[in-house]
Image (cartoon, rainbow, N blue to C red; front, side, top):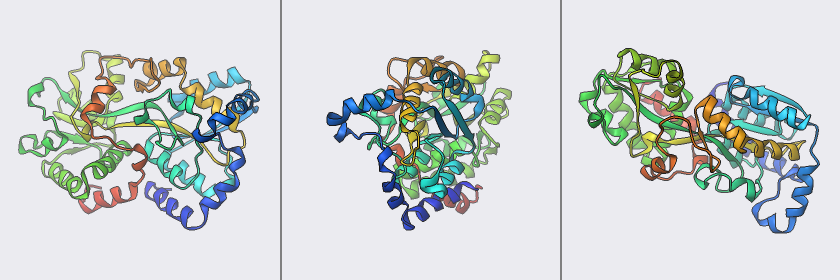
Length: 358
């Protein structure tokens, strides 16, 4: 199932009464903020009575989170079933399955998919104490999903080819003619498409189209993914590349002297997206699903993400690994955005096709 079909299915779910189906499963709902004061004791009792199985739909690769799943399984003695796959395709599967979905938890690679499920009523409100572990910028304003790790868009550059002072403060600066033939990008990559969606949300359709046309006019080199871009940068094949921050951090583990560095722009060019989790309204095992969400935000798991996947920990008190710009500084540079609104991938794909980029 293609990514654009996912967004189409969101519309189908709404039109065909998907919200009504969601309401029927309300008995499994985790208490909302408004209910918190009267049900706090009940929540504590419920979460103590853990079910002995959990079904996770994970858009995160097994290589990234498999070890954590094993740790949680060992701690709870529960049977954990994980369906790994593309984030958008798994979200589409949840919509197709409706109230009969076996999934308890959705672990999405980006906030757009989490927001899409939230908007059709498929995710439930999480307890305030759990949500407050993470800055409000990295969770649903309605409390119906929470970010686990931060994934920052950067303009990585070859330090032998580019001086720091030559780098523009805005992502729009790379449409200038001096960057002709020096840029690498991956238009078919999901993280790039999430960035373009954010660009549309923050700057508007016309400005987003203008940026895409401007970069295209500079004859950028096209790569299949972020890793290929960073590798090309290290060879001096290109001078700058649009990527997520952790790809360079991974390469530095084997080659700390690689002549590539991060540049953070002062706008949506350094979008902070998240990988996050939501508990489904149809969850058969809501208590252990909540415990799993708490587990991902504890200090041990957050340190795991910092040291093994090189993402930004989002729970307060845990620092990222390496010499990375702080999230607080990056957010001050960026226009504020509700990450739930990054769900409109369909129109992003249409725009990329209109400009003849994909």
